[in-house]
Structure formats: C-alpha cells, structure tokens
Image (tube, rainbow, N blue to C red):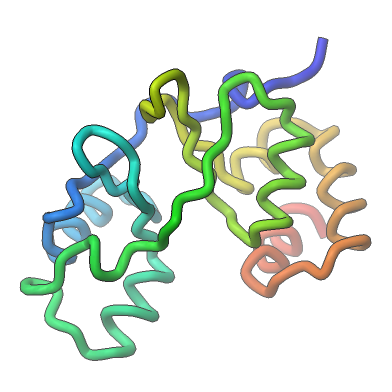
Length: 153
C-alpha cells in the first residue's frame, strides 16, 4: 500500500476571505503561529497568502496592510493536490512548481487539507531519500533548499 496525501495532510486548514485586509490576515497568522493562509472566494480556495508574499508584495512595496486586500497580494493561480495522490507524486509536483505548501482539494473543489514540504520531511524517513534524489536531479530553488538543508543535509 502506498502513502497518500490524505495520510499526511493537515485537515484543519486556516483560511481568510479574499476581501480581508492584509492586517487582518497577519493577525490570524501571528496568533496561530502559522506561515500561510488559504484565501477563499465564495467558499472555494482562490489563492494562498504566505509570509514571502507579505515580504515581497506588502513590506517591500510599502503598502498599507490596513488598506491592502489579501486578494491583491496573494499567490495565484493556486496549485492543488488531491487526497488520493501518492506522496511521491506530490513531492514531484511541489518541486516542479517551486512551492513549499500545497492545498488539497476534494470533490467539487472544496478545501480538505494542506500539505507542506516540512510536513513531508518530518513525516517519513523514506521521504528524505525521495527529496534528496529530486534535489540532486532538479534545479532546486533557494527557498526549497533552505528547508532541505535544514531538515535533511
């Protein structure tokens, strides 16, 4: 039996509405000590707001977090995983798309979970060998290398 996304993913995913302000989103992230929020539009995931988005698109551009809407600075289009995807397939997708966080959607496009590169590395020793192999073969982006070097190297 192979390991699937639903075996590892976090099911209690924190979200915010696309019309929320950046300040409202930051308060949630700080309170919960999390690095991202899934941005929702009409009950479905439309984007992701990460700490990197806040640095690049708000702080570096001196935008007012009290006036700037999450929808203006979130990462989009959103790349999704499915609950029954094999974990190795998910790791390959994350490397290909150069992302560390992958929302998981079920039927009708509803958000059912979130899986991160950190979750994968922590979860299973066999994932380490898969990630090591990919990081040697693929052109690994700097932000992925940081996680890999910290947890694996």
